[in-house]
Image (cartoon, rainbow, N blue to C red; front, side, top):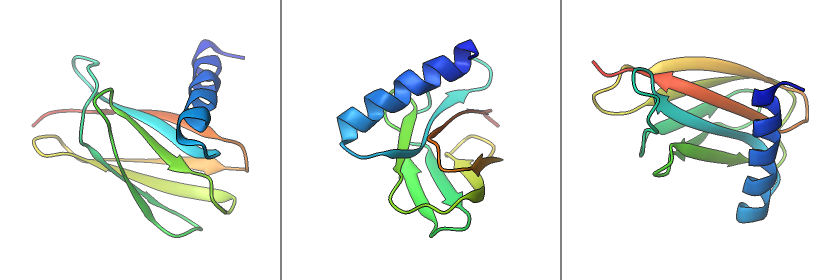
Length: 106
């Protein structure tokens, strides 16, 4: 298991305990130049299940609960004022996912 995926699994276990729900997707938004967390960024998830919007906390973290997510490809759109929007994707196969997304200022 790579260092990133082992860190991701620890994060998912913590998030599940903190929020009391199983994770579908836990992620972090960071500044592409400084690596600093980006607070209050909006994260839109679109895929086989209903769309959902999340918002990052002070550490740049966001969490989407598993609920009844269907397997498949999900599109992520991250936006925050004074930053370029970023699109990315994940393939969900029933296991919790983690994603770090870098965004850059104008």
